[in-house]
Length: 193
Image 1 (tube, rainbow, N blue to C red):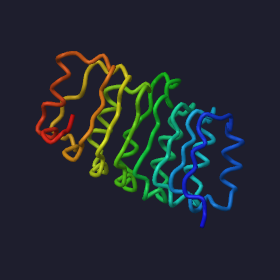
Image 2 (image 1 turned 135 degrees about the vertical axis):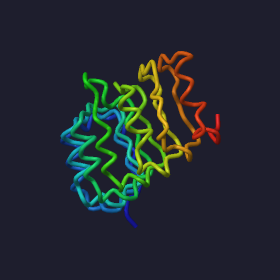
Image 3 (image 1 turned 60 degrees about the vertical axis):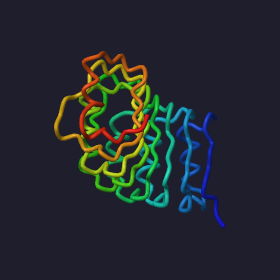
């Protein structure tokens, strides 16, 4: 038996501690890894995502980290993460002034396994939300949390691909009445409160 779940959030690992974890013999068996609030940078998370020994990873929490476009790109390239069903990146990209291009995930078919995606409290723009809502690989996405992103408006599109979505969190996004059109579109008829 090997370690399959590790919750080591809210510590002071930093990138050096993460690199030490990647050298552990059990890393090839890890399924759930929670690293939130560890002063991790994009370089550390990119090393994790490119480490092919983590191919069994199903759940990854890297919230409250200091991430940028490099992590978004690394996740798009990490085709060995084809079992990843839960990704928590809340408060992880707050320092990115221009935001990140989540459109690169459109070229990542291995992300089709995602069921839960939490991007709360980042610097997401309406364009970034549109990249999520139109991603052809998010056919299994059941829960999407975008709370506290100051979106103000939501995209009006006919090509939204989220008929399977069951939970959507848009709390504290500064949305007005004009933005309600998103959740009144036919693709959300089955959405649970």
